[in-house]
Length: 296
Length: 317
Image (cartoon, rainbow over all chains, first blue to last red; front, side, top):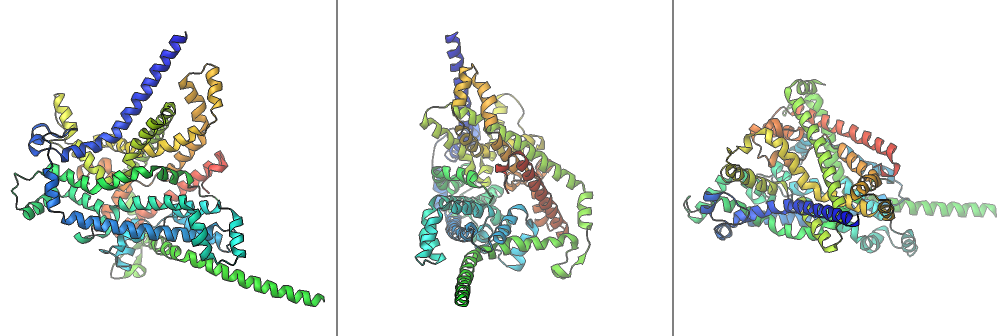
């Protein structure tokens, strides 16, 4: 009886572990596949198709890409600029509006909160926004088209506000008695005390800007302003064009150019570096969801 | 005497209200940058919704264009597209909600069985990984599986002695592929939320049940799931509120905007986008967006009302 029970336990824990491992593999292996293709030789691909482990292992595709880095470097530049400016301004403005909203004594607390909150419920949709950006603001083909639309998100504002509400009142009272102005309280007391909330918003915004191809798709036509993810989109849809450009640039014939590995190598070079960074911060991303209570 | 105190009080009150006014002004100035951005990028487009009731003519401008009232809506709802994109949008979202919640719940319950901290962390990191990939990167991964000549899926079919499939022109397959991709991308996120809920449950409940002879399945079914029931309902209703919206990248970028797949991949968002870039009737595209936003709003309000009835503290507002 006892033996039977522990055997059941062992079998069930075996099943649990097998399922967990299979799901983990399903999350990781597809990414490995892309890397494997980028390291395979074109001959091996002709022969056996794509494989999960590289065949005819070589770095040729990367060599070609690094010899003609033009568009990748430009796109890295655009994405980094967008992330830095967008991330910084976004965090600053989000925290600045969240602070008055967190104060019970602020006279327009209700009105401001409603203005922010309503944007979470209703929006004008794609076409009016597009007309605003292109006709009214004339932002097409400017870097601002990649930054401005994402700066303020109602969800982030509400999250930071909720965090601020949890800060102890006594500190503000003491600071006010000492004659500190609101800006001074905000920058020297509130912000330093709110590092977890600020870090969460910063990381959410960095991920959003870094992974964004949507604004590029809508508003960018010039090569000099194409962000990384949108570059990958164009690459996927127009591999022959890229191939032609690279072959011209490097003076290669069609038969020597490793099209398939080069395509995947571009994806690895473009997406890889940040993908190694984000997982270290995953607890903040998970928190973003659970802290996001909007009430109050 | 009393006169003196009243004037003094008045004086104090005036000074106080002056101070309060100044403070209000300062606080408002802190809101200003964000409020200006919200006004421009959220409220002006909402004003643009009047175009839904007009026949937009570029030369006449937004305000000068002629009113056609509900013609744009009529035109859209009479077309066959309206039904197709609406049904697709809702059907996919319903499948997404069920699969992603059930999947994450099972994984979270399983994770609770893992005792080793290190192993637990490794699993969670791996499950979270797809969350960090953009859809344009995912489209490369999907391409590696579905490419006709070299793709993994056709390799396997070939080994099994079956005919290769032109994946990018088989809408039937995509009805299955799209939910799988959605599950794959969101499982880590949802799992962590549920797992956090499960470790918050009082462990004496399990111990009591185990002493009473309950097996693991019974414990999961009768204790874990009901204990985090409110969390599950909240997650589901949050998603129900967005049932009219879909992740554009999943439906447009990943299937490479293949025309032969539209019957399976066309949702409201992709339909509106395509109408926009092909220079479709502006009034009608605005009308579709309006329809989407309005129904979305009703669903959010409805689901919030339901949550409130169910458990007050989990309501969004």
